[in-house]
Image 1 (cartoon, rainbow, N blue to C red):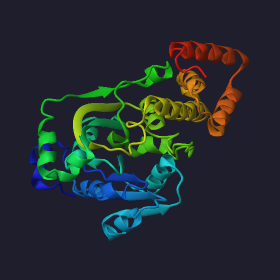
Image 2 (image 1 turned 120 degrees about the vertical axis):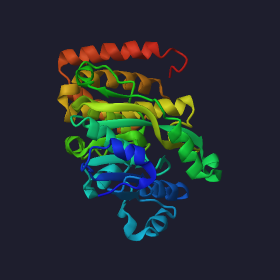
Image 3 (image 1 turned 45 degrees about the vertical axis):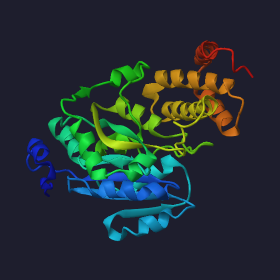
Amino acid sequence: MIINKQSSSLEESLIADNYPLVSILINNYNYAQYLSQAIDSALGQTYENTEVIVVDDGSTDNSREVIKGYDNQIISVFKKNGGQASAINAGFAASKGDIICLLDADDIFLPEKAAEIVNFFNLNPDIDWAFNESAPMQSEDIMNADLKATFKEIYNNNDDILTKKIDFRSNIINAELPNFTPSTSNLCFSRKLSKKMFPLPEERGCSGLAICDAYLKLIAVGLGIGCASKKNLGIFRLHQNNLYTTQDITNKRIIYSEIFLATAYYMRAEFPLFSKLAKKLFSKAFATYLRNKNKNEISNKLIQKYFDYLSFYEKIEVSCNICYFFLKLGFKDLV
């Protein structure tokens, strides 16, 4: 396999004859207006040993027509709507890569993304994950931009940005939360680690995001050593349909409680080693849920199922933690 001459300086840093297959998994639901730019960015990588897998999670817009237009340039997966976790599961099941890179359909990869990630893995053969950052841009600015020039500007601004090798496994066991875990489109995993994490629990919740990047990155950091870089290797699209970032504080709390109730339950169920962190996440999420004005049956079931895992003394401990976090949130949202 070869790498295009567009990134010759980066090519020289890659270990000779070590060009792993990189699978880029794009998950899409009703983002037809953004999807082509995501797919084009995945296909336009300077590192050529890639496969692009696009999963449509039962879209009701013209996403499927957009995907079909790429024919055999990509691997297409069409499925019934089941939430983000089920879409990522379908993408992983269809993949063959040694390295798995996730890309939301409304985001974009810089051309050097795959090459940089391969470089992280080649220079650190004992790592199992690699995280980077993305430059935020308003959607209208992206649509009107000269993307080639924009990519170049963002990438060149990465000069002298360090990448840190991190072993946070014992911290996760001791319920410490990492501060270097970015959003979905900045997450990359070795296949070895991915096999331990997938399939993800297909708990979609009311938002469709109950099991999402929060679960993935905490499990990944708990199971393996990795590299975290502040390099912007993509573009994070800001638009009115962002399911979390554009919400008001009330809706953010509703989504937050749902995500972390699900994350805590399945973390405890699937990875008992992280039970201490699961307690912390559950206590915060339940306290937030109690503050929410909108309750739902899905969250109620997760709460009950989580408590069923606990011993009598653990229930007392968690109940005390819930009270602490409830009071910490303040009294302004009392129901």
